Image (cartoon, rainbow, N blue to C red; front, side, top):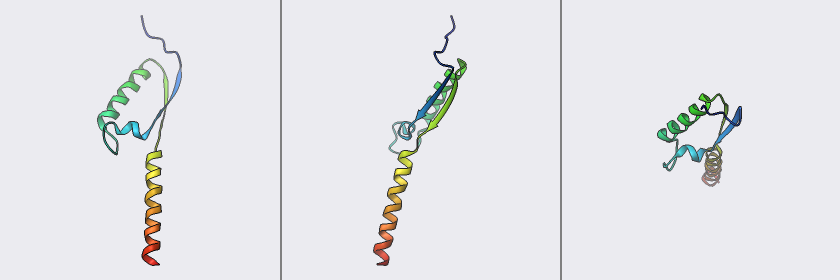
Length: 78
């Protein structure tokens, strides 16, 4: 008996933290390979998969770095 999916289409949202795996930063290759394998199985069932990858942790870090750079620049040039 073959599996019949409950949905024809799904939207999968992956957080930046989920892509890090056990690492303290960045993207963990083995974690990505595992996720891709699971997505492949779902697609093999005939499900259309949309993927959104979060980057909140990246943009938040960028904002902090930018504020620190601007603050340092003001102190240096004051």
